[in-house]
Image 1 (cartoon, helix red, strand yellow):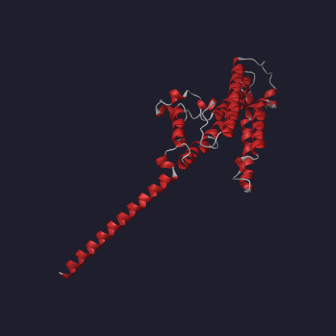
Image 2 (cartoon, rainbow, N blue to C red):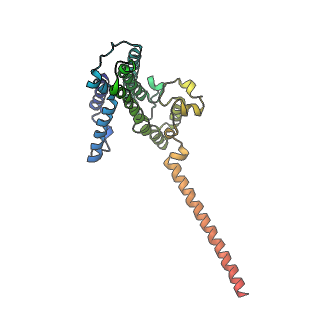
Image 3 (tube, rainbow, N blue to C red):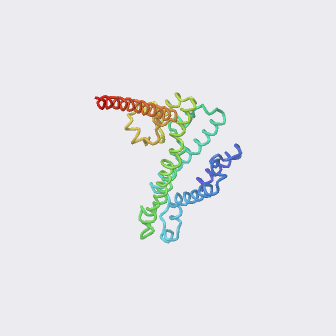
Length: 275
């Protein structure tokens, strides 16, 4: 409930301040994409809420519940507090930064000094913390049968959210597309490229150390997979246009060379025939 109130409250505040929700700019005039967005939102909320839903279901509540306060419970509450604080504060930090700076500025203050997406990291921590608390009834042996299996199966909730943020709607829509836009518009690209190199994509880490880590470590431990990385030589439209132009020129030169060769063969054939 706290998580839902926090998220909905922030979104409402942002809409009231800006006068719109730009997430729907490309969907408002298209009925089915707009409907699909809301249906997916309902499915997403339902899956993410599975740990709490199953914990409070009759099949689980029929068992006597152990008192709250085990080490797992305390660890879950601490992680929940850390995650909620991180995502809440980082959302506010980014909103304030954007309201005070133009689009060329780089948000590298507060939590964004240690992570390019601290709000996503905080959200992931929150969901795994909720699962940790919810599954305690099964882990401590107070629940058995199908209820036991169901509680453990609710780990699909936090994993679903993690996959969603990392491979569907979060990092994939902001990392490479955002870098590409900055590069092609010349929007403080050099400084932004340095920020990308210095700052962890998700897991908070001191940038002074992260900058000098081997690429292999960044790609594995720090989850900066190749699909997030923007390479101007490969991904910018200008580079693609240049490569296509070079291909056209190469094809034209090869065509001229082939034509000249064919003409030479025709001349030789003519001489042979005349002889």
